[in-house]
Every structure is written in structure tokens, then in C-alpha cells.
Amino acid sequence: MKKETKSLFKILNLLEQIRDLFRLTAPDHKMNADQLKTLKNYLKNIKAEAETLEKFSYGFTK
Amino acid sequence: MDLRSRQEDYINLNPLQVGGRTSANTRLMVNSYLDGYAVCDQCSGALHQIPKPDIAGLTAKMANFLGADLVRFTHGVREAKYLLIKALLKKGDIIVVDGNAHYSTYLAAERVGVEVYSVPNSGYPEYKIKPSNYRKAIRKVKKKTGKMPKLLVLTQVDGQYGNLVDAKKIAQIAKEFKIPLLINSAYLAGRTKVNLKKIGANFIVASGHKSFGAPGTIGALGITKKWVDKLFYQSKNFSPKEVELLGCAARNAAIIGLAVAMETIEERIKLWPEELKKTNWLVEKLEALGEIKQLGEKPKQHDLVYLETPILDKIAKTKRKRGYFLAKELKKKGIIGIRPGLTKKIKFSTYGLTWPQVKYVYQAFKQILKEGEHGI
Image 1 (cartoon, each protein chain N blue to C red):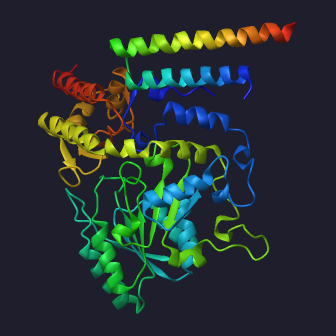
Image 2 (image 1 turned 120 degrees about the vertical axis):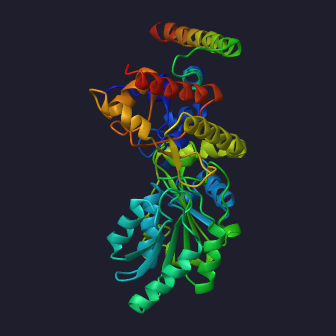
């Protein structure tokens, strides 16, 4: 799989994991300390993968 | 069209939907196979033989899980039932089904012109199916028509009361009369393990989107090898296409979802005892609120709950929205899945909810009753 496609799917996977967190904590999405830590970790990883995509976009527009 | 956020923003108690909640991994993989015919990249003519994605592996795994010799995937249980009835029976044949059977069993029979005799349930309040009544029904059919039924059908867990029927006992009766038996395990297989051979029946149908945490819609028909020539026979002109499947049935992303769901099926079925604990806990607590009675067998052996709720009906009569007040009040509290308009009897399931969510549901009902009693 190409690097940028892998990043795309990793982001999609992390978003689906967040969706599961929302399902588990419905209806108010009040999360415990572990869940908040997990959410923060997901968001951190999304940012990291988004940076890969961003670098790719710079390369594509050159 | 709006995006659906019912599972994310609410606690969903809809008994039809709870067993089909998908995991993040399932959704990701399904997403990547959503395009038309994506499943068919490496197909050489038969869905169940596709190596990549590993549908061949899924087929074997499902056969093993269901205790069947062979499995084929359909678009759902109703399609699997119709396939079976159409392949084995002809117009004018008779089948015996349990009195709590799903309407699609009757429709499948009607479509083929097959007559249905049903085994009555025990009536209020348990609505149980007594296995020995199958014997009575078979004898009744013979006496009335001069013919023996050609098939017995058992809805292992029905969709109204959530009663679990002893399938082994009915299989023994089926053997006694030499009539094949179909087990409709839509509401059970996938929540827990169900084994066709251990039951002693001939066919089993299972639902991916009802009980395996797979997306809709995907069903499985499991059979013992004796029946392969009648059910899974290939076309004379278009081998290896199987005629009763019209060549290919579940060639969709749902089968991918089922494959992913099956990767963690052993962990899923380990949760079954805890699901029953949640169910029985909530039933006990709700009944203790007064004027609420659980219908069907007790204690519950399945998560589908049907309650008689005269107290809610009383409160409804004081409300401007009448019966719709309950669904409205529950939705305000972030709970959905109970059919709007109903207050005399309500049906729901807590399958897949966390314990805090189950307790939240109890508190919500408690508060609604309290507010209702005070005319709020």
C-alpha cells in the first residue's frame, strides 16, 4: 500500500475508534480518565498521520 | 439524507439492532470494500471459494462455528429459509413451525405454496413453545391431511418474547418421525455458540447483522452434507454457479464485515453470560418499580425483553402526547429504540451496553415513572 494511502486508512481507523468511544459513553460522552487518555492518544495519532498527508500534498503540488 | 448518529449520541435499546452493532475494525474493512463488486477481485466463479479476501476461510470458519458440514452465505436469514423451502419442497407440501416464528418463515412458505401448521405457544404470560407439542402437531397434520409434514422449523429464540426453546428435544422428535428440521438461530448464533450437529438437526440459518456484529445484510445457511446435492448443486450450463443461490448471493461489503466480526467471535461469545446478567438485573429492577411484568420465560435466557407495562399506559393517558410520551421522554434522556407510541407493552434489549449504560436506563425509567406519578 502507498504511504499516503496507509496514512489515510490509519486516520479512518482512528476515527472509527473514536466513534466506538462515543458509543460506549453514550448518551453524554462523559469519559473516565482512561477513556480520555485513549481519546487524546487517538487524536495525537490522527495529527501525526495528517502531517504525513500534508507532506504528501506539498509534494503533489510541486 | 442525514448521517446516522443514533448509536453514537444515544443508548439504543432496539432489539433488532443491538446484535448488529459493528466494531471499528469491522467498519474500517467494510469501508475499504464498499465499491461495487470489490469482493470479486479474485473470484474464479464461486463466492465461497474466493481466497482474497478470504471468504473461503470465512466459509469454513462459519461452518465450524455453526457445527455444519457446509455453509453458504445469503442476503439474510429470510433468503436462506426461502432457498431451503423452495429447493426441498413443492406446492401443497406441509411444514410445521413454532407458533412464535418470524413472519418471514410464513412468507417463504407462502411464496412456494407450502402450507404451514403452527405449534401453539403456552399463552399468557410465558408464551413458551413446548417441544412435545411438535409431536402433537405432526400427528394432527397426518390425521387432518393424510400427509406427513415435509419439514419442521424451529425459531430457536423468537423475536417477540425472547424465549429460548430446547432445540435438541425437537430434533429428537424430528428423528422419530424422520422429518428434517431447520433451526432458525437468527437471534442466537453469534451471541453465543450454536451447534447444528450437537442439536441433531439438519439445517441452521444464522444472521450476521442480527447477532454477529456484522453490517446488514448477511445470512448463513448451514447444512449437513447429506443435503448438498439438493441445496448447493451446480448449474448444468454455468458451473460452478450454484443454482439455488442464483449463482452468487452475498457478494457485498457485508460479507467482509462478517469476516472481520468472525475474527473475534470467540471473545464475543464469552460475554454472553454477562449479557444475560445485565438483562435479568434490569428486568428485576424494572419489575420492582411496580405494575411492570416481564412476559416470556423467566429468568431470561436471552437479552430480548418484552414487558407488560400498565403503569406506563396509565401515565400515557394523562399526557397530551398519549402513548408517544414514553419514547419522547426517553429520547430527552438520550435513550432510543423503544417503538414510539407503545406503552401497554414494550420490547427492548441491553445487549452490548456497558453496565453504567444499563444502570442509566434503569434510572431513566425510574425517573419517568416518578414524574408520571406526580403528574409532571
